[in-house]
Length: 157
Image (cartoon, rainbow, N blue to C red; front, side):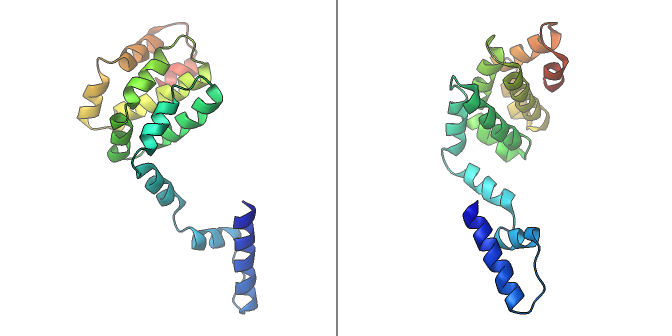
């Protein structure tokens, strides 16, 4: 972060010295990184990255699982190609196991339900069919019909 700030400050200074108008922070950031989302998409598209993220869902520590779920959730809310990456990496099985686990914390359960519902709603029919009949689908049905789960979790399921 300090290096980025130094580069931005140097860029703003060089523009000011050259006699041009001073650029704002967002303008400098846009010049340095035209589309930050494209860099993230490119990184997630590298072989093995999504598979590693999916594998980390099995980590016993929720401090590891939470950010992984958020990354996968953002990926699942993208296009069908991004959803396919999660499916190909075994994401349905890992998410299903997480959602079906009685030890799953409410925050993790909510995030995992959000991912699965995004995948089911926006994915091609093949992914939706792949979800039906899995532990994930059974767990989602149980969550929605059970009085044991809070409304925030049911809403995501």
